[in-house]
Image (cartoon, rainbow, N blue to C red; front, side, top):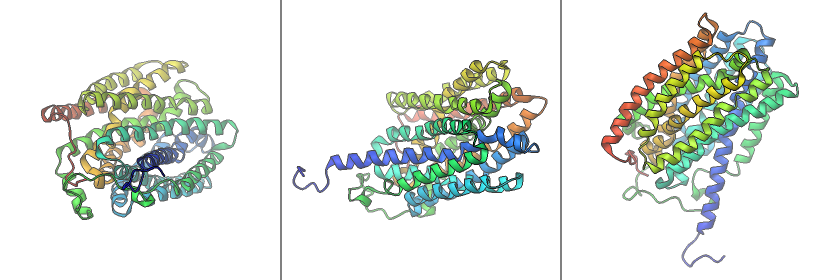
Length: 434
């Protein structure tokens, strides 16, 4: 109605479906966090019910889950590019909800360990599938903007999940009721996603984004052609190395912040759970600012990444050495400062850098591999940090160790920055075509 002659589908309808897709991917991946952050939020209550489960045991759950998550990123990132992101994205939600129900029905460390490992493996279906779908719905010229917006899904999702779960805890449902509520919430989001998430615009009768000139007739890619260009690219390995250090620090704060606030800042468990939302919340603001600044710098992300990591190293040292006993305001301010200096560079690695490297048809694979490297590095955030926090070094030793990790990551970021400066404004490095 009212469309120009010869134009089968209006630009308005395409724009509307792109908005729906962006919102559905954002909500879906934010929903994943309801069934991921719940263990961190429930950790103080689980420890009260099971006195034999201390920091080391909770750390074991986290580390084993992160290892499964890292391995799943490799498998499921490839799977999303080969069989379609929609199936993988929605199936991951349903399987995660089922795992969380099983966790809520279980007792004992062995059962918790097995089920949490399964949950983290199926949770790894989410991000790679999201990147692949976004790459097929939007043209390459707006990848940075789109991935910047979608990166907020795991920051805002984590923050809202913690606030939401903290409120549920206030009703006195216990940690099991908390897990059942988490599962029901994610399952509902998955049902809505069946009507709003599609692999391509053509699946809803719309034209696909214009391909890069000369690649219109390229055949579908197999595993070899997806992996080969990435593994030969030095920028890919630098992104993996940076993501390993950044994810180690991020996962430490994602997992341990409620317990740290309870033990060191003397907050009640429900308040500690809700207050832990300051970390992803502050990180979301940093990610927005970093995305806008990156555009103004014409994609020279090294100019943001390196200074941020210098500041992160110093902030972690201050947090480790400051006395926050009974001073929750100071503790939360320092945690927010860590988030601001960490999340700006973190959001680049498996978002827009992955799409730059993998292109429209290999973005899910690139994101999966970069994320896998990150979560392999983050395995130490559970058992390693838990052991340090429970040792004579306490939380001071844990944060000083994280500062050392940040300093090492900073050295990798310096190399990345120098490569970018020598190459000029970054362009898509993908050999896959778009």
